Length: 430
Ligand code: 5AD
Ligand code: SF4
Image (cartoon, rainbow, N blue to C red; front, side, top):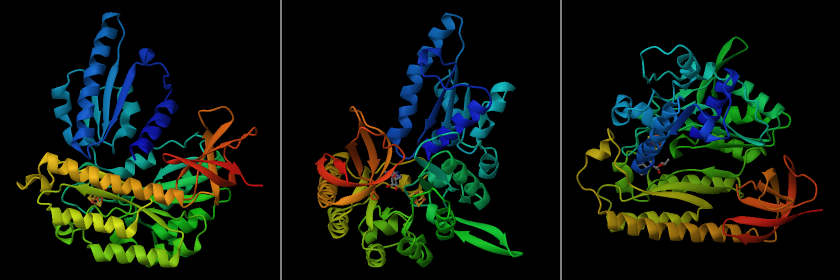
């Protein structure tokens, strides 16, 4: 989502006469878009600010100015604190307020911190993108009402807000006209998307499933994905889409976080292991091509060896196509950060290492099962080598193909021949 926000901020600034600088030395505004999800991501801001402030001082010595601006979730969570920790910061903007930046830069008053929670104003101020990229992100929902006990999102991105269907459709149409073939619908809790439209004089609720159907009717759009869902929000209508909508890709990121019911309860996840496993089974039954990725947290306060083994059991059962796993990081203001039964760092490190080696093994096995198969690849751009193009399979696996003709923007059948770490080399099928 930060990637999407950064693009939108860039579009907004360009529209207001600013230009993206390719040379850092020449830039007179530096914007840091930050993440607060884990401590490591959050602390990165301060090390980056340390380097930037020296740069700003040096520029001042030669009579040049530089504005340093912090946006994103650290800006929302820490506000004034950032200005106190680093005096060279000029403005702090929460992720819901970045649309105000051009105005603030032009008529700077004394306010330095902007932390509104109103998403609506932001979405109505966005500028249509000129991007010609093949695969684009579109935020359809922000915020989260789930309040998992470890997570800062409900506090940094605020309550759930769904962008209007009209607004999303207009952005999708523009992107497709500009050359996009694939859209990934984004939301912290995308499967809770819900917005009203008036049809035949009556109010109708549009959910994620309806939105997938509506967008799939756009001529020229070939692929739709969505990210990230909560298992309890995957309803039968969405499953129906996965069965009948050929533009909806057969790959779903469905975080479970832990395989232990005891820990899931402490995490306030609102689902247990058997609910999750039966959901996976149900989805595979309606579409046998479906593959899954997930998020796992190891070392949640009070996690025993037995709890950890239960996470590994889920991994063995599902055999994820790919997954993300993290060491628990206590976040300020979250209920779990107030617990006192923290897990020893060494134990968490060992658990993470063990989990990641199994997840990697499964990912490789999943990928190897595609060798010598022909799959549709959507090519998004050039590779590093001469005449090489890069694309993605329906399951998001990267593929490299050598071709003397440009493949950019094309959806073509490719025979997958070799697997190197996580990407394939293939040949166009004739
Ligand atoms: N510690 C570690 N991982 C976390 N995540 C969210 N909050 C924390 C935390 N406090 C992980 C979850 C989530 C992903 C985006 O980040 O797995 O799904
Ligand atoms: Fe955070 Fe996702 Fe839980 Fe919402 S559902 S609180 S975003 S982990």
